[in-house]
Structures are given as C-alpha cells and as structure tokens.
Length: 294
Image 1 (cartoon, rainbow, N blue to C red):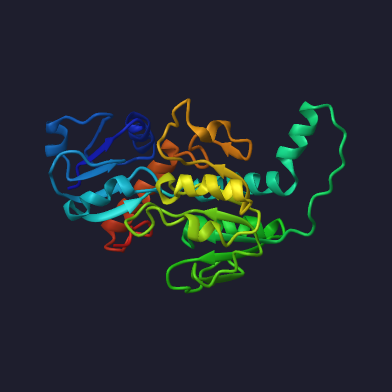
Image 2 (cartoon, rainbow, N blue to C red):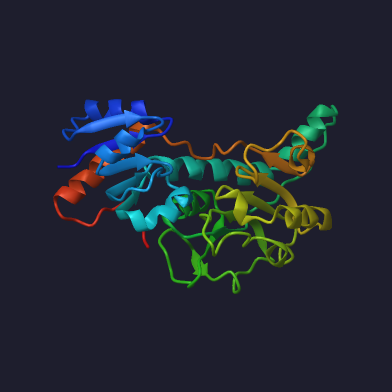
C-alpha cells in the first residue's frame, strides 16, 4: 500500500484535488512536514525532499527538479509535473519574442515621448535557436513555428527531436543569424554557467530569452554582451538570485525586461492529474510517462 505525503505551499490544494478525483490511497498534506509525516510516507510529492529517508516514489511538484537532484540516491522512482506547463511556457516565450520582433520596447519609448515614429519591424520572421529539446522546448518550438519562425533546437548530441525544423549541437549552431536565443535549460552540473561570453559573442544583435534557470547564465557576461551589441535585448524570467535585490543592475538596464519567474506557473490541478496518471502507471507495472531520466 502506498502512503502519499504532499508537501510545500500547494500541499492542501493538491490534496483536495486528489480527493476530489477519487484518490484512494492513504494521504497526508503538510506544507512543512514533521519528522512523523516523513517517517509515515512511502511516497512524497514535493519541491525539495527534507530528512534522510528513502522513498519508493517521489514526484516533483514542478517541471524543474534541480532541488531534488541531490536526493536521487534516496528515490526509487522519480517523476515530475508537466500538466499545462509546456503550453504556458510556449505562450510566455512567444510573447517575449513577438514583443522584440515588433519593436515593443521602442514603441513604448516613443509613446512615453509622444513621438509618432513609424519604424518598420523586420519581416518575415527569422530563426529562433532554442537551448534544450525536451517536451517543454518542443511545445515552444511548435508555437514559434506557427508564428513563422524557423526553429533550431540545441542539445548535447545533436539528435533530432520532434517539433523543430533542425536540431544540432551548440558548437555547430548558427548563432550569428539567430534573431532570438531562447534558454530552456534545466540546472545541472553541466548547464551551470553554460551561457556566457563564448555563446554571446557569436550573436549579432539577437534577443536573449531565459525561461530555464538563472544559474545557467553568466550575468556579468550578459551585461557585457548588451553593452557590446551582441544582444539587442534580454528578457529574463529567471535570474540569480531570486528575487532580485532592489539595487540589482538588471532592474534598471534599459535593454532588459524582467518577469518574476512566472513564465509557467504550477497549478494544483496539474500536479494532481499527473500524480494520478503516475499512480496508474505504477499500479499497472508501466514505466511512468513523467519519469525523470537518470
């Protein structure tokens, strides 16, 4: 029998969603679990895993799971939430890219100055390079394609993935002609600081969008790239640190747009739906669709 503990700020909402959907295993919810809660559970839904116990199954409440990676040796089966997150991310990235392509910052500046300047935007749309080719990146690529952009996915092997016009490695990617570089990378030892001067210097006035993790970007290199013209603008939904201190330079830079880590918001209903799907997979002896690869 599974004994499921739901933790974190959405704990009670996720519990209520599970109960409403007929979840029939022993269930507890605690935003801050006690040692007794952790000892009782055989499976946990969480953002991070406190204590030192081992669990048959742990489900990340979010798509990103870097806060759980250090606990992988305590987890037998590790899954994550997707739900509506790919669709939300696609909307957010399309907004950032279209705002740049249609000269949104320039239009707002002209409006603030009462200046009727009919500066033409570029047409047709060009190339968007996406760092990452996972499920979320695939949905983003499809949405950008629907808007007329040529989408290039970047991964370590260059292996093809659905939803992209082309997939390659970072070393082989044509960054020079990219209109936008979209960072969808998770935070791992390999991706920490991966986007810095060596990447930015290959761009020619592109937009940089980061909706992955803040620590994947070297922010001082980003500042220099903006100063030197390698980047025309940066749209950052994730930063280091979070939240940004009031005095941080990113807030005041005229070529930076900040959003407070809201490109894709985890909903309690998404978590509950994905938990129930994974429970069904485990009961049937199937490998879960939402399994996190080692």
